[in-house]
Image (tube, rainbow, N blue to C red; front, side):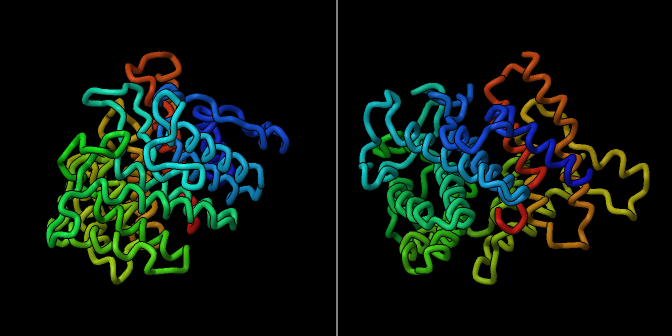
Length: 366
């Protein structure tokens, strides 16, 4: 697929979530409010909008049009004004203030308030939002966004830990909206490595390696306690593991090891292994097709991770082929949503932004 066709498909997917923004004039873009996403409370869902911000930055990078930076800024402002408040929209989350609007964290944006799939705060959603703020800071040259990310990091960090200063602390996967208690006491598979890597990016952008040193040390103790990274068969988990591992440097041994092991898992998963040019035709046809799924965003996350982790490795073209296959017949998936044939219509937004991110990850910027 040539670059212009990729960009057209990228925009098509983004339009599904954020409307026909390409026709906006500069003054209209300045007053743009993102349309409500049916998959989020009051129209906002933190994971979806984090990738929405990143995708607008990709459009800015690919086209050079300032309008996309303005749309990213408006999306950030909208998310903070909704997910930084309680579900009534009347009060900031506890700990937040006008001076520190993210001091209470950010809600997930679940449609329902309570229950197994009720609202709260996810560590991995918060770190992807911090990353989006960091990239916005770099793209716009406005360090305020990175400062906001650091304040958010410091605000939420202790609430996801138990026995935080012990030699072997543990983390919670999900906490209450007000950060007062855990809602899911088990640990997320990636949360500690995710936190360590994203916090290191924030500190590097701030030009102050010590600004999050204490928090990074907490993550490192969790990583040390857990030992070897636990591999998953979940496509999104594998993809986001590779996305994190792309930032691995000599001091990020865990990230480096995680990336290598994830590629091995892709090679060994039935119907997922990339077929190299030396494979026989009979084996390549059965080993290169992704499994059918009614949750396409999970395959798109896997595609994104493969693209990011292997993009500088010319010796692994088979992984780029697999990344393309994982995107599959994406237009048909979105048409099913639009025809009402998918039971979970609220997943269209997250699927669309994840597809766009997988199609054009954003090069060195993202």
